[in-house]
Length: 175
Image (cartoon, rainbow, N blue to C red; front, top):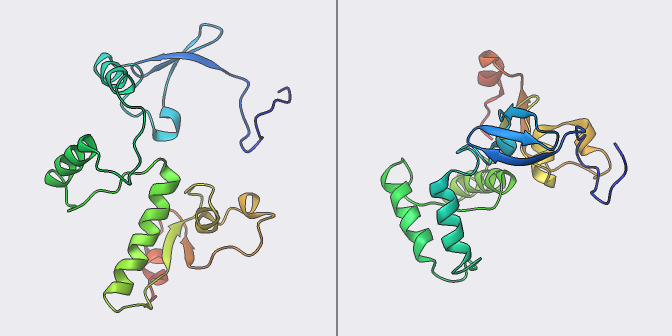
């Protein structure tokens, strides 16, 4: 691939998509692909569904963004709907998978801290998993290529092989 102004943080394929429709992506050369990657899981509802397109167009025509410093009625409505139909009492909206993983790590650590069980702060992860590119999430994944050049990794993560329940059980400690 030719050099571009886009930072080379990923090994990109020489393939560009120009549009999507339902579960399909269409490349600039006209080929159609079934989208199993779903934009790394951010387009799991498919591409360009008419109801979603309409809702997005209506929203962008009224207000593009509003900080969480203010009440956002649609956000409150969705949070209430999610809480009513799940195990959770509250919802944390975030911008990316990385932010959700960071939030989960922090919520778990804070939960045990508030219960007076401060020694419970470690997290078990699975070898080969990807959690994002923040300092904490690259430490959680323990991928040497991603850790290189960033100093000492964030502490608090132990790994087990995927599918090895005995290793998982053995890795559970008081921490």
